[in-house]
Amino acid sequence: MIGNQSPQLIGEDPAWLEAQEHVSRLAPLDRPCLIIGERGTGKELIGERMHFLSRRWDGPFVKVNCAALSEQLLDSELFGHERGAFTGATERRLGRFELANGGTLFLDEIATASMQVQEKLLRVVEYGEFQRLGGEKVHTTDVRVVAATNVDLPSKASSGEFRADLLDRLAFDVVTLPPLRARPADISLLADFFARRMAREMAEDFPGFAPSAIAAMEAHAWPGNVRELRNFAQRVTYRAIANHSPDPVQFDPAALDPFASPWRPAASLADNPHPAPARSSQTPLAPPPPVLDIPFEDQIRLFETSLIDTALSAHEGHQGKAAKALGLSYHQFRGLLKKHGYGKGAGKPAPEPKAPIRSM
Image 1: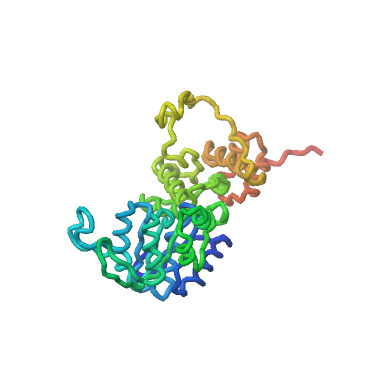
Image 2: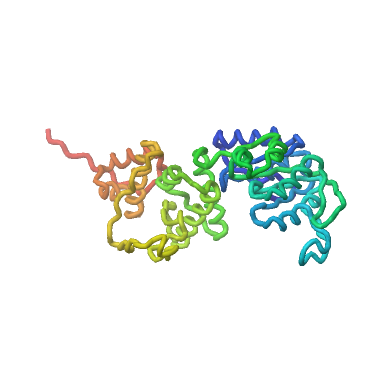
């Protein structure tokens, strides 16, 4: 994001475009709102977009992570404090509501705010009035509140863990972001964007992802959503570039978890009283078990493209040798390349067989 510009949001999947359209309709209305979504779905980016598409676009956009601060510190961070309000408060400090005057205040992880802070939030959202910590004077502010969370706030309100009246005031409208697994059309697009950015950072060219890598990424559930995909795409790209591999980047399951190692220490003996012995690098691995929530056709595509990429890589792109290694005829192998959308330049073509001499 440069200056007062809406942040770049990448995606073409209908579920993602629908969420953006929702934001575009809601942004001009000067009302508080909620953004709901799993971790890594882009709630802060959507909050920024909400601000820059609103009439407050030229005002401040101020962010506060409610989960990162204790109750007293969050109170001080939001509403400010007077000198002597608590030990260490040697000067008066303006809070985020004052700093965001005329703009938007983005409250991330709003569900973690204490009941005392929620009570003060209720008044400032409703009336624009608040008091600094340790002060008696009532101050006013003109702020649009956009709050975000990854939990179900109505359930929290029903159980008494979140103020129902505050929820009513925040939820003029609610934007619920789709998880990455619900927008499969965006996975390869996002992975390519993040990988190219990593390659530029390393001052290298990005050779692209192998079709089997794309199939594997589309089949993965991505519990960490876009943030997890970004980390994986950049991690697997930098490892491939660092190894000076000219081939398209392969899917590396080890890159999903940077802590993965046969020598990773157990959390505790109680957690893992009988650790499994490290697997020898010479021991062949069994095929991964099927995942029942992934469509059958996707699993077949993933398996076939993985075999193709492995064979081509092992034989430096020579299609004839790759076909032979897989026990296929050259034309069967070419049929698989065409079936899975490999480009015309995929691998080195095998020499065409000479026509047999036929006797009359």
